[in-house]
Image (cartoon, rainbow, N blue to C red; front, side, top):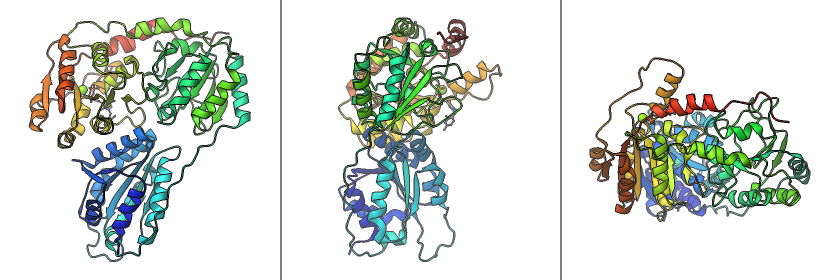
Length: 552
Ligand SMILES: Cc1ncc(C[n+]2csc(CCOP(=O)(O)OP(=O)(O)O)c2C)c(N)n1
Ligand SMILES: [Mg+2]
């Protein structure tokens, strides 16, 4: 007779689960034993947060829920940041947590936290499994809910007595394909009319444009309409192959060079925009009209209130929209004349030989060693703005960054997940010295899994992004600097390799050698953040003036 844990694992196999990330506790021992007898791989991590970031990134990259597992109380609570990361970032994920037995109470209140309630605001669904008979249906439901639009995390709590209980065999619920409906004809007609009437149209690609299912249709739409596009930070790369219609990435909300085009547009076709992202532009009473094209209706926000919505499966809906306007657009390229000016100023001084290297130079050099399909996974810090703004992309999901929860500590685990999924591609984590240290213990996991991974640490001995904001807001320089371990020795102590860059021209050869050498290789490079205020504040304020009135 199967146990509850056997049914759980059989239900996970039924969902096609290949691995589970986590840190088990004694309440998971039945599940662990059932996993031992299954074909699912257990990937042990050194902190539950690492497990959750990896599982969420699996969901982000495949569209199928990633699975992580922890014990009750303290272990489960360590999943909270990962849950929020998946919830805000719309990444499908299943969290399985243990709990004391519910049929008796031999340990009184020891380690018991109401995890199901604690995770309610952090998940799409949070449920306790109370009987073995319901395991197949609950697991099927959990996977459906996690994966359907808008994707996100689900928590299932399995008490240890339900896990260990002998159960009647229960049939699994088979999966079946489900198609997402295509947008309504009336909304397509309305959107087409607005696009045909526009004098200066612009496309914006947002976070949901990066869903694995989205990108084919997007490339087709951009190619058929020839309307220039920009993207949000999480919408990078969603026009396959890049394009001479790319106008830039909105890493700031206003007054960056790309906003010269945004401010002049009279219509923005926002594809897949999710307002969890820091606003890529600010809508006002006089600004452009906005058509929202996405899987879900728009959230109305102070800064985003589209006048038209095309809601449905993005790729097929865009095909239908392109059918209505293709060959009839006379103003499609109206804003294209701004492109060279925007892109050349963004790339300004990116070959400068200063030491420590400037962010522009670092972004430029990283791009040289990463092939088009190579993946960089960014942690959160000042350099994220520079990478978002300056790093050109040609393939969707080749810049994994979090512009939703924007948590520190996810860079390394998300890079590890990318490296597991795409062993043939170059994968690099880019971290600040602050964010890296928040989950640096996962280097042991990466070494144990024999991953090929380069970790670039940009060292300023500070929480640089906050220090920048402090300076911009005219506060005194206080409370944001720290010391670092010797990162090279630190890497070596994990059995990884380590290198320090000591001259500007050495970054490219050091990274190149790190990739060629294989294994886990940490490269630390000092960064000169004096450019932050100079370029992102002073220069932009002087050079990019918002328009008083939008052009007629
Ligand atoms: C978990 C978490 N804590 C705090 C913050 C706020 N925060 C955002 S960026 C940042 C500094 C990042 O420092 P570092 O990783 O060294 O990158 P740098 O900006 O110095 O390049 C902080 C503290 C955050 N986003 N996430
Ligand atoms: Mg730093």
